Image (cartoon, rainbow, N blue to C red; front, top):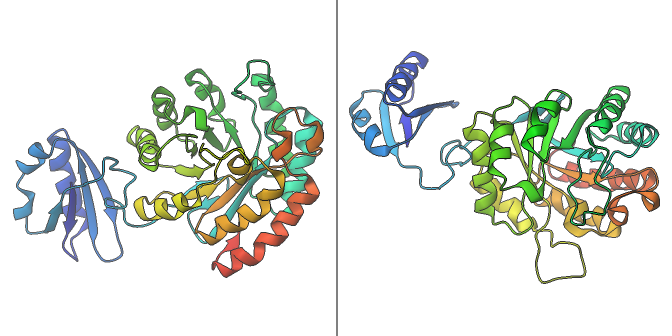
Length: 338
């Protein structure tokens, strides 16, 4: 339920109401606004009704939360959430660019590209150390041995790092070593993993499953936030359709729709969304235009020799071209590059 307090209601009054809600075994939420305060109550609505809060002098109205996802819904949280990651803000005026190789392959590789990304204006460094692949014979990443390489590259370049966690057993190992944990498309509905990252204090980048609906994506985010971690950024990375000309179909209308349904920041992955190197720059421009809060792109010192996804990774020069070409779009959208 959403409990809207009357204008001028004090913080102390809000705390008293929240205690009444909590004492009934419900989960209270506190969302102060510029004009008035909104409280939330998650749990059995019949128990909430027994409190008779509508008769409280400070309560203006009580409304049910209609969407199946509660904490990530704009119904409950109308203002945009800003997620802080290593000095970078998702969901504000900045347009955030995350860049780096699909996989960490060597110290030289990740160091070289991280310095290029920093010099070109990228905000965060991505690099996979655990790589779930469709074929068991494909390169699976360096595993735990790759983490020191990523950490060193981040420290030398001054960039916060983003890396994918693929199993519950990896969460504790990774949560304090990277600035942001990524949940990949294949794990979007791995509910034990979602709960595990939800129990950390590390921001989470949640990618949409390749065959998942928007509601399923938001419910996956709900798993994370309901476990206690509200620092979630959503990522549209393309969905599987009948089209075979591209790796996936980049669903940019999902971005605009998500911005109306949820307060969480939304970014776009044009690398996986198309799987075609030549399409990354135009799709990045489109991502800015449709209201995305950032992009995540794959960049490699020598894409031809990349051990994974070589066909969709940009070279350092192509990344410079991308940053130069999207800047006018970022300015036209009333934003600045992070």
